[in-house]
Image 1 (tube, rainbow over the protein chains, first blue to last red):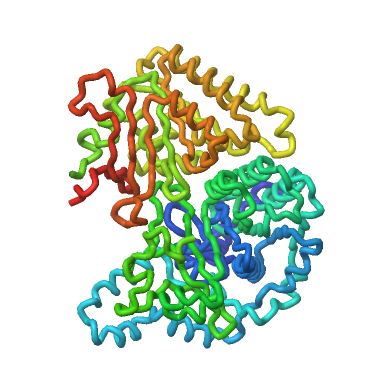
Image 2 (tube, chains in turn cyan, blue):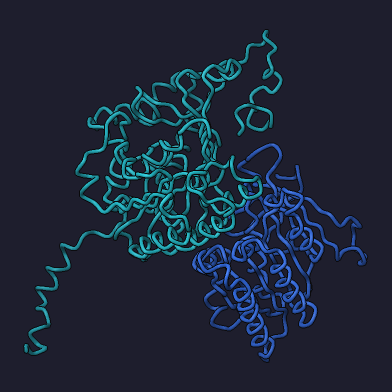
Length: 379
Length: 257
């Protein structure tokens, strides 16, 4: 037994021990792919740089993200894959539940990060024209608008919206994720077909989430739950509307007190309208995707860059945690594009100049298609 | 006309009026959350100029830290109110699991009502308490989910809560969603609760879409205004609002400076 006196560290010792301790996060970015936001919130990346920017930083830790699927196209899988890949890259723990027999095969379709980070930085600069130099160039003509750009930039940097390569990677959809990332980590895969009872799924989620209790200190493990097509017919949850709602409600309750984010995609069209509304109310962040038809001449006339679009993404609701102020976005509908067939990009819709002589169906609505209910852009 | 919410009554307070023993229903939609009305009512029950009242808060959707942070910015410390026995916070986030839901449906609501009744008895026995008791439910649709959509049980529960309002002068404030009752068959709960309510507050988005200056519109239907001799006989008021961290601006359409 050592005497208590020997346990006490020498003053010099405690001093040297204190110095090398890692600096506590005074900046907005901390390690492990978690970024601090306002109101004691924290964000993790959605895996799509543009989506992080739109949502004001990413998916809020402790929130439930729901994506309404389009029954015609699997665009929701793009969001889900990037979300999972980003998590694996940050060494976050992952729970994936899918409606297929073999959910592990879905992991093989996850995209890998783009290899040449320098080119992606250059691309990002070219795309969003966020570098001041480029703004200067563009502003030579409309110099009187310069002050607005300044405002916007200070706002964005104030809210920590600047894209950080460490926080969010750019994923190359044509490149599979490296094997060692898939095998080296704890990934729970569940087939929803194997769980005829939602109570089992609830238990799996609850044991998974119990590993990530919410602490005040930032850091520690982060969990990501991805559930694909929860109410799809092949899961066999027929006449279980209330069970599913109950599951989502208690999942949301558990997420509130854990260091995790859950993304659920669901085909809203097969739910009854009122049940679908209940699902939407349960979501903290609500997104929906829709495919654009290949040859819709009306749309092609209405939007510039229609040829490059693969779909539309709509932001219905952004998570409000620890605040009562709603997030008002500049636009709710964004176009999903694939840049060089590799990178997923979200852009504001640009309306083509209306042909005054044409007298088409949209000339009357002018530039406010967002508010007119009948527009094909609303969904 | 902008109303400074610190110095005088704002539009919402004016329209709702005061007094206990009432049922207030807040309805909202997916696009526009109505929870700020709840925060407002929560804060105003602790404000100094009204008689000291007790709040029993049934929280089904958010943890205490969420309400605490919001109220702090509104200028009211919930932790202190909790210590002073003026706030009974019933955290129902983890009310139950889906598996055993069918077996003890009844017990959940019976238990919850027991807790509420208990809190009411404690607070009405306190000597210094001369104000009202407010029971707040955030939110009713989640309670409905815990009973697997059994409208009768919810109505029973609300009936019991309502007896508290008439017997002991408690106020009952509920948040619910309007758009989940789009089917005519499902509407029973909403119409019954609307019938019970003395004040119905509807939060809706603007028809013209989102705007950064106007977050939505409130339609307040105060049934209690019928008998009184008020300056306007119209008991339905409609105004716009903008939610801020430290309060909410209410203004009539078109009057924003």
